[in-house]
Picture 1: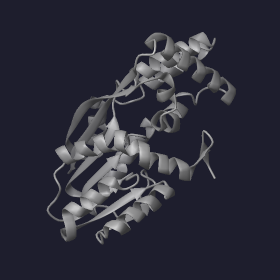
Picture 2: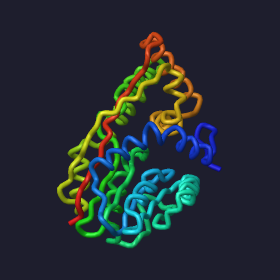
Picture 3: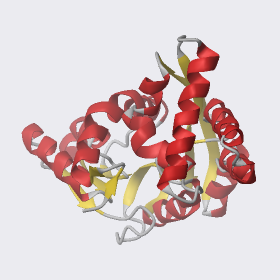
Picture 4: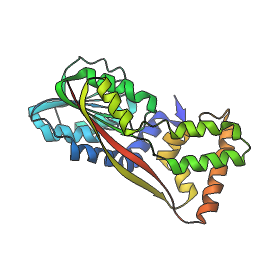
Length: 275
């Protein structure tokens, strides 16, 4: 079975449900509840539904006036979500294992399409928007949760210094590439417009994450399971990655002098209407 940092997919899925959903997923879902009106009836699709929290809420809110289909490519997360749905007894809710860029669902079938790209590589955003637009009905709302430019800048600064201290300056351009890989709000709006989603608009909220120690930051499930592997992927081997991790820890401990360490992201909800 595939592993990340020695953890199985099953363990990663349960860590996601326990630790990442409350601090990461739920704030983005709250943006959806605030800015995306629920249709009075019809079919709703959620793409990258994780362990099912938002889909369960949508199904309960629309009731028998509509149905909710939720897709997730991680089979273990689908299993967890289905278990939750069974407890809630929501006959109008279906969970499917699907790739977000190739859903295999019928075109023009959903009156509201909501997607989550917050843990995906930025290169997946445009293909995911294209697929969400394809399955949306005409005049349907399409909404995507994602990160935009200016996220994790504090982390990239520490990574750059760690590379320098490890004598790995040749990799510094890779850190710059990480910092600009997130799309700007304008670029997100252009992606929406390119795929036939009219009146694209982005709601942006600055979210801050605070950790008491360097260890708390580097060993948090959000960073250890998802973002740190992406940040260090360009290094040649695990021994080099471990050297850089140790140096990042030293830099945080030195600069903070046991004070809290924090970083921020640009939590973004992009919305458009299919025409």
